[in-house]
Image 1 (tube, rainbow, N blue to C red):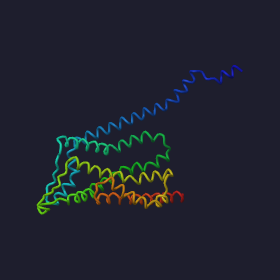
Image 2: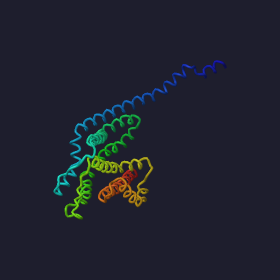
Image 3: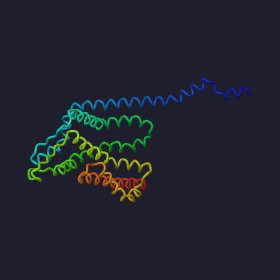
Image 4: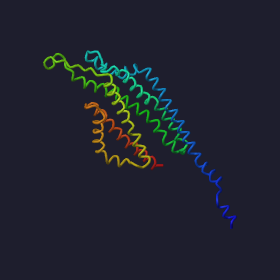
Length: 270
């Protein structure tokens, strides 16, 4: 009887060994997470240093739409600095933003390396298209903003200039500050880039069963209202930027519905 009780009772050494074995995987995960975070931060710092070195060239690239619109009006594109620190702050902000954008693929790779070992083969295969589509759609959104929306928005804003023929000979000339222009451009590029990730979000939600194609189609009218309200809040108060953001948002919403239906049809046929 006493022998059975002794067998059933674990010794302190056995309990300590069991606890150490159970905590070992957690410690390994924390060490792996620490490694991935340090590598990701290193990528961001390196990208920031490179972006800061080429900050003047990057800013000139972003200012090109304003320069082109000014040239079409027969004027030289010029900006002002309202504070002696504006130039430094603008370059610092721009470099930090570019560092996040340029290092995103590398950081996403580190995140994938941390998560992938815990996924099954079919789960890895299912998430692979989303990893490829995310940077592609992000770049497409930024390109649409830079090459189409921003030049038209600048042209709209600059149309309110007045020459000598204005009221009482008053001359009103557009002279944006360096920081204000940078804030406007980054806002538009970031808004369009993030908006173009909508299909990735919707398809992920559909894959886990949170949304369906029929449910999304039934809420289409709410999406139309929400798209224009979102565009009104996130973009400058001009119709070009707002329509330019709301329309692609609605098109991406419809494309997501079509992709979900095609995917479900393929699963049904299989």
